Image (cartoon, rainbow, N blue to C red; front, side, top):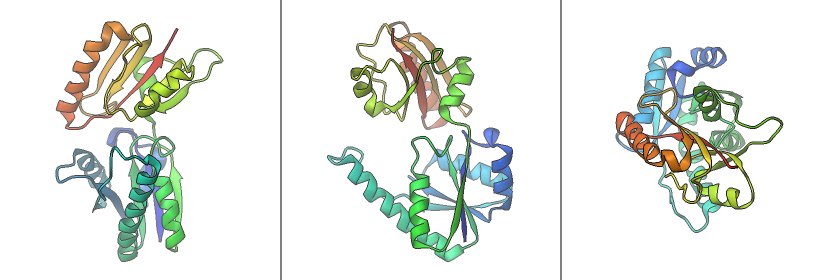
Length: 237
């Protein structure tokens, strides 16, 4: 039994040669089905069709999105996922692939879940990288994510305020439920949604000048694709 964790960028157009070879050798793909009509699952299904692979859609366990104990709630959710995926692997065996949006190293839990599966089942596993959202953002805007010799802080929309208050002035922000940019009008932003996929949108400029444009572009991306993944670089003075 083998599991391969494969970064796929934003879908079929961004699969690396290394990941393509791994897909060609896999027996099937395991993926979470988050709702009955799941457009992100449809993209995975399209990729599976390109490689002649079955997609095993596993109903995703329910999750509390606003828990008092966020780490605890995520841990419980992961354990429920592990149990569901273990049942599939026990039944089917062979080589299973898990397809990860962007790159598995950034704000994705597949590696943690597969490591836990390896504690429960006799399996080998490995990880192949994909094109990450920050890489795509930088390429689309033709920028470097940091100033010369300076750091870049990668965080989530949930943690943005804390990062700004701690003195961070050059941030890549991912996993955004919304856009909370109040008080940052003089900062500059390079923003993108659904990069490399249907409904791609790009906006850049002074936050105070492009705020309305950002909100409109965000809704266009969601309407076009039926889903929204956005990422942005935010730089203070």
